[in-house]
Image (tube, rainbow, N blue to C red; front, side):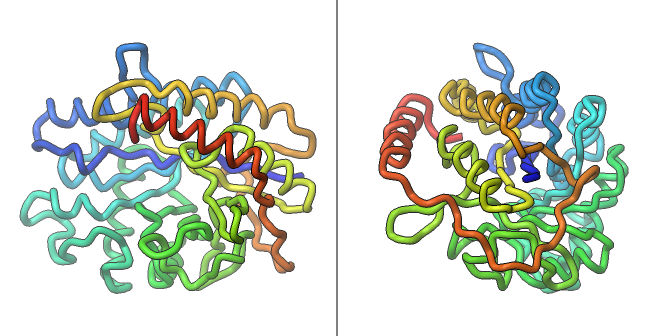
Length: 324
């Protein structure tokens, strides 16, 4: 059995912050969490509905750092619907919010930085402790898993998580090089592994022409590539495969337009997982991944037809609807 982990980085946008008032928070929530457009809402409510329709288990990695600006109520509005739908809430953290925090706030001492790896281990521990406690104060169960904003973790992040009792991290993205995770695991680390006191669960990948890899994110792969990658993982005896999406990824947050191409990928993925033999969706709360001590299986090999179709689909998607 191969367990597919659909992980949703669920977050307000620090880049859309225009103030600390209720109207500013409501606008950011509408764009980043609800995914409101003229044709409907395609944020977390849409994802929750699709998961319910197809019996999908998923983990929402919720960023509590906007509480530094808008208070815990801003996080309660995210956590509540997810838990009401019976889905899993885990911890996410974008340190960009430190630059928006009110003076004299609870993390004023640590300074600012774009990624967690910009801070030493003690400061990371303080940031993550605040984030964990805020998430719990917003109604979430105590988290066991974490992903860094921007994948911006390093080995000190994992040590800080271990200090705080979080057993799993999923910040290592083997397909992304400089500018992403600085965890000391290479591109061949594609299966869960014990590292620096936690179980590191890498983001899924597929192979690319020239020997590289592409990460398994809803905006980065077509539906055909994602389903082929899952089938390949199952055929090669891999116990899990991790996919990434975001709360806002089916829309363009700035223009507030739906992206039907990406939405069809997501909806089709939910249908496909339900029908695949030897494959089940899973979440960290109920079935966390186990570390594996084996030679890593190769990623799905590059295929010129699938790659060409992706280029064409991405060209249309980006040209008509823009980036998220």
